[in-house]
Image 1 (cartoon, rainbow, N blue to C red):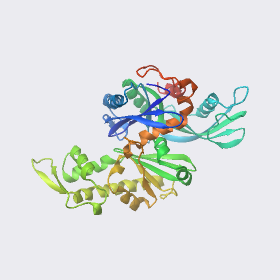
Image 2 (cartoon, rainbow, N blue to C red):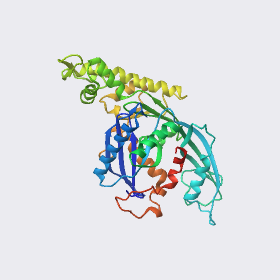
Image 3 (spheres, helix red, strand yellow):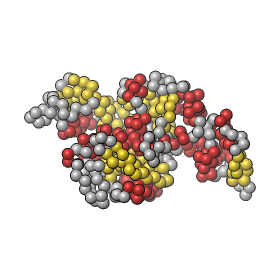
Length: 410
């Protein structure tokens, strides 16, 4: 796989493992392949069985490799969870070089300086996210490449996580015969393609409602200020359907996807289907309206929990920029109406706009691609990476600078 032209994101979700392969240039990003597999060995966003998780990762990777026709040897891995925390940091370095032009080495050094913080032994730095660079006192610089100065500073957000949880994720990836190019915080990645600059400045809540968990990201003044995770998602609805109709979970999931609507008033009483019941050889007839009567209260409760969690994080229940919703659950028809009833009218849904990955469940994976490109464009397509190596070449990652943090988990 060409390290200078292709990047691969790996999103290990509760229901699916998703792999996205993109070709990146300085001008644009083109998604060229997608792989997915049923997620095994995970629960509520955490890995509980390494061998099963490895099998799911390998199946998704194999699927993507067949589509793209290359061997995938390294991936960027997305993480989220209540174990993740944020803190502010500051780094300062002197600009090297006789002409005092700021280059990638200077930026790497100032980011490394910001990375040096005191942490408990059970935690480790996952990522350093720059909020602004300062060159000789000139503030609000987003990209200092090519500028001339003597003193380079950075105000940054340090993302830290549990060493144990992250180590288990890395172990699964490595046992799947892959190397880790970097770890990306999923709320940051999703925000890359879901939120506008105005929304981030005004204050907005991004909610990614997946199968097992709902991940929240609160932005204000242009930056990520807080994250949170709720242990509810699409499985919450599926289990209620299974109990309510006395059927198996697998059947309940299929019914939800095929006939489910989030508003009872939008359901068609004339639409009926047969449901096999547990403890009986007979099937019973259920209408779409009856199914909606199970789904709507649970969807309402998810949005109520989101609203309460945002308030518990210390923010207004109705942020100025409103709520932006994504994730697989948002595919349920008429769910926007329920969201607006619980969260206010300033609510919108978002999905990726790339052919083949237009489902909202791919938002985090596609967001990772765009986030990586913006953050690491100078390393990805810099002069040293212009030459395309053999497609099937495997070996150690050339992005050594992006992988230094891995030593903390080994």
